[in-house]
Length: 207
Image (cartoon, rainbow, N blue to C red; front, side, top):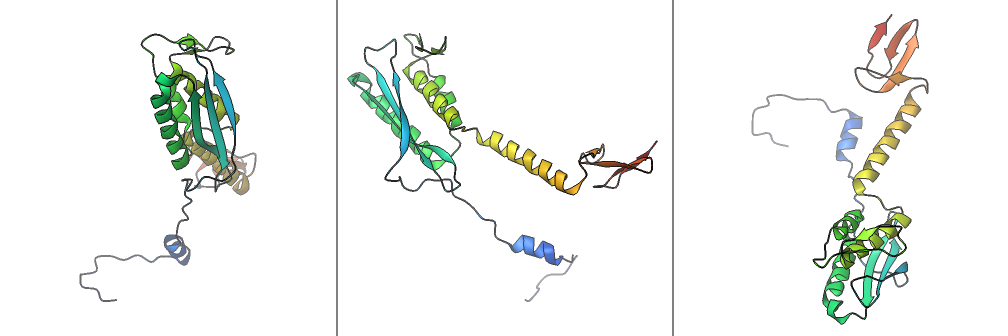
């Protein structure tokens, strides 16, 4: 390889580091490309106080490439003809989000904030829970369904995974009786010969 500029510095890359840099990072897609022929789900009946007709919300699930059960589509059916356009649009949009990301908890929260200018109503059988609108009621049902699947916000899942990974890492490397180091904040401090010593950063304190 020909070098056309002056060399102002250099560094030696260790063999292990070179492997880590050159190794490709596997990327697992979270997009559901196609709908399976057979899916399982639940249908919820909503009887809003502001409508003469019931609404039936069906949410179907699928197991993605990561082995996680997540919703793939939502349908809303009602004899209320005046609501046909908006319930069809809502179902299509929510289903599209389901297929493109596992982080769907926010949808339920957003729907719950939709207000009906004519006023909301108490959800039958909910022990006092109030829906601000029919859309908000659908949001409550979606939240209930996500709870049954143990679907959490992606941020919460990432934090839990990080904490678990750190705990396992520390558990494998240092004694179970080790305490947290005040300098590097790693649980790697042990007492030896009357002194506290961190096995991670080497910090030592006697007396």
